[in-house]
Length: 421
Image (spheres, rainbow, N blue to C red):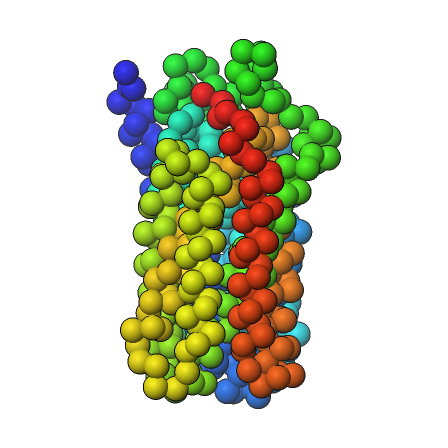
């Protein structure tokens, strides 16, 4: 029977992680709302302007494995606090940007360094440490904050309309620091062992992602990975490719351009921006529903996510002037549910295979896949529009990415491994 102290402590960790992902990833996901206003003020090409988002994702991808690996070398709490300050200051400083290279430096280079230290590369291993079972449900609840960050971004639209995009950047950056810094300082702990507790659902001492596992693999059916063997494994790089294609070149290509696309075909800026909020709400539903992977399996859940995003992309391709709001919000709902299911399940799949001392590193590598794909996706969407005058080719490329992503995940086969309990 589970003891009350671990339930209370684990709930606090989930709440802290939820708020962290809400505000920290809100800085990144603000880009589609700021994008049209920056374009209107400076008249830069869409490809050149979207490059700052691609650069952000690339730098994040490069830093994610480093941040994940540092969890076993430095204080994870100190890492989070450093990331919060850097992320908030970089966002606020965007208010002073007047040249493209200013955005490339602040939003494209400095902000993702902070986000890598304050985001999933540290928080995902934390959740895995606190939960020995029901990991799909636990990570889904924590990552729901990332989904709601899209709703938080919608609020930025009203601030921009009322006070301008520069003031909105200042408010967002300072709010990130003012809320998250004391929250982490007072409420965060990397693993339950630091408080003399065992993970939720653990009958025996369960090794956390910061300790050396001493597991009899003949009895647990769990492979113990060294740093070298994990980095050489086919499974790790298939998961890297799956995340790269789904979120990097698929989701972020669409997310970077969907607001501007909706405005181009006749929707008002408020309606266009509201698709981001609708996506965020639907993503939370997908993340909260990710517990189904604990029952139907990771591969089946990823297949369902790919079907949802694939159908949503087809709807987007056929949207045009006079389509009405129903198909627009249908796209947002399906797209968000699929993205939410995948965002949780891909990392639970990583935990199924690689949980142990180096899980932070392996989780960071898979997160880096999203970054490398994102370095290409949003930029490609802008360039293809600049060349063809249409987003149709960009959206077709995103749809193909979702299909190949599922194939990569299926071949990685988390179903062949059991979670350390």
